[in-house]
Image (cartoon, rainbow, N blue to C red; front, top):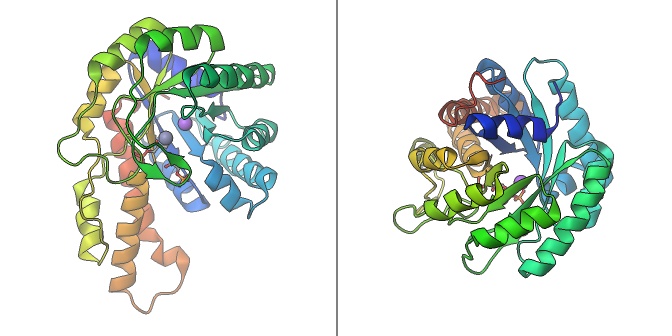
Length: 311
Ligand code: G3H
Ligand code: 13P
Ligand code: NA
Ligand code: ZN
């Protein structure tokens, strides 16, 4: 079923589990995410960045957004689990408008790089606009370190829980992404992972709405090692261990954004296959191992986040 993100996340918030939101750019990752979720009988959120929409539409934003809606709806309407499609890190109004018009289930307005008051004002506008079309909204407060495509911040600025309370009340936003020390990409921490759990706990107490963890990939050693065995250079890669994410879920995280783990799993399988099968040039065959690793990551996350069996 193609459902609203709000329906998926409100249930998760009430029952203290989290639903992974997986970033996609193409058909192949989507196929495996759906397969994994069906096997786990779990709800799942598919999300696309502005970059993904541009890529799929070959520059035509409306076309890109429509393609993703059609693809996701086709899968969603033929299986018996709740599936939603979300715009990740919407920063430009054209993308938010395109997603709403094309039929996304929800959008993120990411004005986290702006000063608090400006972020609040922009988010409030988008909420008014999206809610008028029955679409729910995610916003972000504080900033993530790390640099990935158009998502960047010089340094970590963690969320202020008192500000979060005001922000949620005044904007009417449906879900909030609190910056608590994670960052995007494969190189999140120099040493041990360090997250501000106290801050997260306060944000949940003061807002009571579903919370979103960005930069939540675990960067599993298994796939990093395999990719490196086949000539990848991923030295220093480090993610958020599953145990730390589980603590976040106990404290009120209900949506766990995951992109990097799928990318690394896929590239490990792709590199392995190409190296071992130098005569292969059929993409349906050389994508296969990578796709199977994507499915493994999906199923593992659905399980440890507590989403398995919740469809
Ligand atoms: O948060 C960023 C996501 O990983 C999407 O990245 O802009 O490279 O598609 P992207
Ligand atoms: P990762 O880079 O840790 O997968 O984070 C993805 C994300 O936050 C997408 O919004
Ligand atoms: Na998002
Ligand atoms: Zn993110």
